[in-house]
Image 1: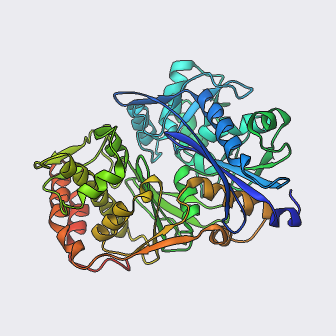
Image 2: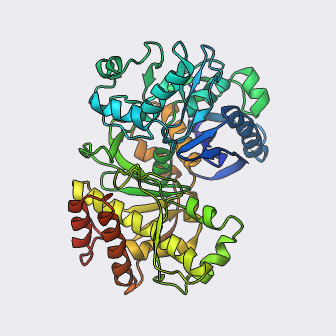
Image 3: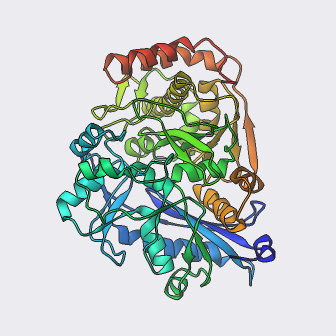
Length: 493
């Protein structure tokens, strides 16, 4: 463990293994960014399948970490690092931690039949979760191999040996966070190979230290502690500081993730909302939608987002209503593997469609919050926007107007910042995670809904809710609850 003096003057590294890039941040304990780096990633999509080559994660990390450390003050000690990955992304490795399969990404939907089997065995899993994908991989590649979550592979390279999984990434592989154990009876019923799964530790647990080979490749000093991380959604939540009960973080990246804090787990019989557990024992309920900024890239791959935002301001609301799914299947605020994106009405031109996509994501975000309210989740704390979408001032204000409640935007909206805060928390050995995060988080902007704008979006939101219900995807009681909240002040609930 780093001594207290070194920790106070150290930089902390956060690593974010995203869908489109690897991001690394080097920050101080008070949130000052000393360096950052990124390197792109590419995947393969075919129908419901989405894969990446896991070897590219390491190459990208080496590039990004050297860039982040390149501007650090000479002699700055690195207190520690933690790694987050996309939730539900898994692969198979051999006994040494080398990949033997492609990585099945967070939204890969090829294991629907395996998911149905898991639900029959009493496990509340969704089709794209890691557990059914693990069953699919074993069927393809046979027993005798080990399952690895996305960060596990990187930590293996960093420390030189396969680590235990962190409980945050293990959640979608079926790990029971209340009992802090694998559901052995259900897994045996499903025919899980006995040695497929690794041991599990809480986030913030020390996993090892940077080995000499990794130090040479990444530029991270040998001996730097490596702490167990959390999923990218949880990492962004830490970066937002939304860790006290009733607080929520909306992470708008390729997809949309909402994460909150509660004293007790939020119960959802459908399994759409699930609960992570923070290393200090508090609960982090939330869910991940398949809508998000990925729809903009899919429809307008060459667009200048700032220029399109400026044009979209003339369409409030747009003449069209969208549910902006890029690939089939929705996970939150309802589970519908057959769901597909759609456009109601004629947007008129590219600017109108861009506006409809932006607003469609905002409507989905509102429906997520309405569903959480339906479940009785605490919503009376501050709402924070993070993720790549939070770089757009126009979109931030638009979402605030649609939601009808204030929102905060931190200076840094990167999940990598959350991993730096988790590393600092883990090395310190105690206290509340919220306190460590709040020391690093700096709020840049506080947004308020513009007068009259929330009401202007009520009719198109109602049209979308009706359309989702009529297609059989959104349950009737949930639709009724969302429509019943249209004319109420939801800023404090």
